[in-house]
Image: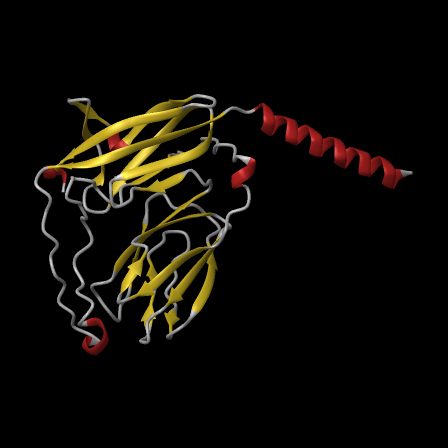
Length: 257
């Protein structure tokens, strides 16, 4: 009889939690970041190691990537959770996160920026026929494994990082990447067109953080022709149920870089 009562209690709790999730409103945010200036020409990288393999990859400095129309790549966007703040509720569709691969490929990190939730599997991979290492300068959980050719090493972070953690390869000193670790999945990185989108965000007021490796906090931007100050790259925005908040074009002055 006690087992039956426990079973019904468990079912009731499941139904209750499902009801809470269904009752929660969900929205999204999107936008496009623009480099407000003449797009810089890609600067070639001096290959000083494993030249036979890496030398013909036409490697360039990817710390600032701008397309022909000004689209600013690799702006990092996420919901900021400060000390004492409650992390946002996670939408049921985002409860199970697939593994994220952070690859050493053609003597560079691919992708340049990876986002991962605490507890989510991050696969450190090496697709090259030469050895690499992926040194991650995380505050809570630094790692530095050697990756022979073809290696795939799963890792999990148990605590969020306040800022993006720098990744590097000490064998090939030009290699740089970034790993963003948060306690929630509400993160994005702008693509080659400067665009980003985050879906299934719980409705309400949330503080969003905007960061770029070359500029740091994006604290001065232009929207709709007007200069806007985002202190430490943060701005509070309202997410509405079944609505997409479109920031439009957000221009970042060239002087910020």
